[in-house]
Image (tube, one colour):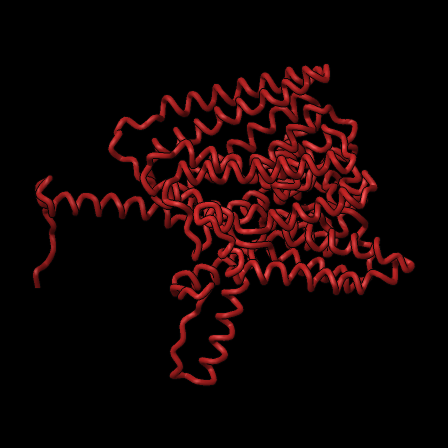
Length: 513
């Protein structure tokens, strides 16, 4: 791992994060809130920490500019951890929360776009704090990634490792080779989507401050709101349908937008099998849920349709918004919602979860094994979007799914030992690992986690980070094999220099017999 590039890149990201903290500080000044001081102090701490990392770790060897996969994993993982811990500072200084545990949970939930919160009365918080909560989700959605890619432009193809480390590049989709142009394209698309949603919210009657905050959190599939009751507090069908449309948009693979932009064609959308399955899943699940819950709405089909579609879309896209009390639905409808927590949207989208493309590959692999059992001599290859899949990709997906389920089981076990009943433990672990937010059976609100034990909050916060970083990015850095690989690479480098005549040959003692 090229530590100098990794830590200097993390330092640059922290400096940018500190600059971002001046925005809620300015909002606090505008609204005459004393909390702006806390954001100025936090901004100073972030800029100072980032400057120290950037200038003291800045690489001296200008020739080594290519980043490898593990470098991308390290930058994303360490950058995310540093951002979360620095975001804890304004929450503590403003008195928004009163413990490090709650500050960690709120910060992790923000940057991972989970939407779970420890704040019971959201409306009582200062506006600058609410704006910062929304900004963390927007930055976590894609803003920081854009910063990374723009920052690392000139690192040859190494910058693209960041896309893979964040799960933003599907195996069958390739982003544009010009990283700065790719970052600009992603940024423009992301900003455009955000601006459109903000305008639509304002047109539908939402106040400007609420519209900006919800535009930031909805387009990032975050789930934070300026109201304790969430989107339902506005009691507007128009606002709810705008939210549904925006969440569906966040679940689409962003590489499709990049390809459509460069090719000036919508063919990529039409030919994407994953996109068709994604839209089909939303439609089918919505129809089934609506049919199940309609009798409980006393013939009000409009409310049943709106609530059913909203919750299905919110769960599949991991948006995390709650419009109604799902626990009041019939049990089969609740079960469908729980199963949808394991779905996720398209690969390369803003949303979290397992992602549909992995489910497609696993299903195809299962069918292939059944056919191979019936016809042992049959030779077949898996395809995705008319392209053959390497065996390594299939193995990687299978391993990912196994690790994901193992982490889920471990989380449920620990939460159960903390005294949480099984339904609450199961849905809370699924929700936080998948970056969804709402859980069934954890308290008075589906997104309120403040009453949970401290151990449970730390565990769920860690699950949020691991799930957001697509599991592999964290495991690669903590697994002992990573350290062994560094030693192996060092020895390989020495042997290469020996072969090329750069150094004298090694003297090896061995028995020729």
